[in-house]
Image (cartoon, rainbow, N blue to C red; front, side, top):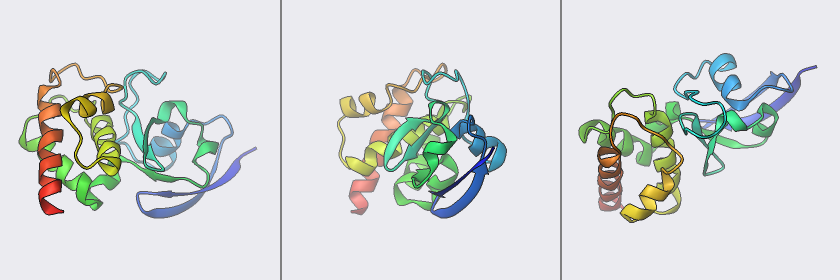
Length: 158
């Protein structure tokens, strides 16, 4: 028996029916056709499926679809519509934080959640914010640099 849920996703309201055992990542990718959220490990360890729920970065592979009900959700597809997200995306490209790209959506979402709550994080706070996101290509230096550049650019606009 399906359950009806209502939520806000990327600044748009949705009401959909979901299977009771479905995970959020499955709803995003399979029902809503938002393929930017990637599934890496399926157990919340790699961060590839990170989204922002009510301002907090979470791994969507560990969230049941029913838990989406009443929440405000942001995926990588909605980032360009926000000032912080747009700056982050530009800086990731400009400073070489994108290699194979598999981890990039999750990294962006973790950085976005950090900058939502802390517009001037230290490098250590940035490291802590992306600690749940694994990258096999970049060595993290370019990612950290990109987030710092985005922070600086965002602060300069404020």
